[in-house]
Image 1 (spheres, rainbow, N blue to C red):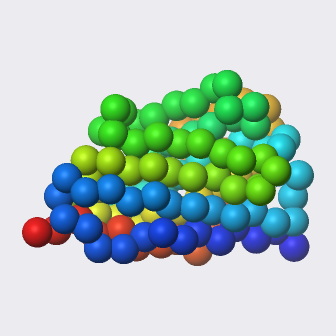
Image 2: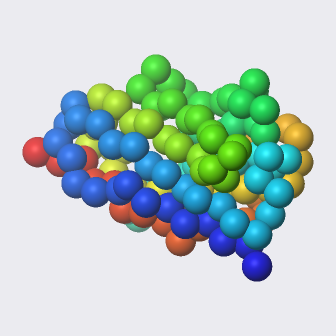
Length: 124
């Protein structure tokens, strides 16, 4: 049974930082592409960042480039999202996603497995 468990969400003031983690079990992590998506209140789910199995290829949404960093630790079967200079518009439920493939994708329908989500709230 594949499980993705996110943690690290919370409440932060604008300009602050958070680090999200997603621990994966039940699939071959080091041959899986990983991604983070988010769903702001009342809006559609949107792509945030993706990373290939080797960490060589990464992709970011324009709205987070230069502020967010995706990384992974294959030995720990964990993917991270370091979020700096957070803004109120970053408020959303953040989801970790995985698929067993070599490339990366910004399309949600590429990913086979999803976590339950973790809430991030940015407000003064």
